[in-house]
Length: 199
Image 1: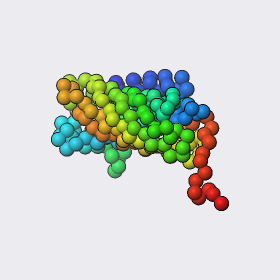
Image 2: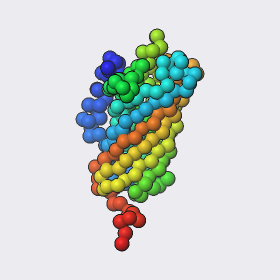
Image 3: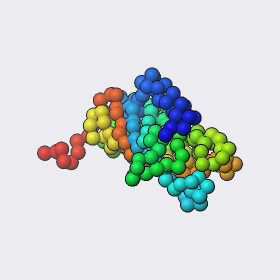
Image 4: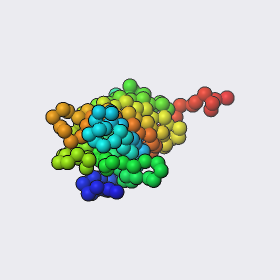
């Protein structure tokens, strides 16, 4: 189930992004693109005893990015546990919600088919219901990932994010988030010919 805070804020943020044209980008000609992913959060064993679980699954992770220049990209998005339990598959101890922002660098490979990147940023992470009296927590994020473009408009993305929660914040513990999904480029990309496409 969607907790009241995460649900209302997440849905409101989703419609806001849609209203301005959700888009996600990787190159100067195709500056905007939209991405949707599935994600999983992992807590270490010590923090899992406090937070109530080792793993938490998010069925909705939406990112919005814009390419600026020289491989620099601004990124914003959110993650939300819309479905907290699927019987026989997983069950979350609490609804995870975060709003994320980052600056990414793609090593000036924006026009390639395979685009690796690194980044730094921050998040506002919703209070876990498993910790009484917990509050909204900000984290410092360290990012690595890659997008493989297999079509002029569609690519597959995977990303690893480590979210560091400072010691003074006791509501949310530091954790890693892994996501896998697809991105859509609103501009048509020019793909490099792959080995298996050549005569």
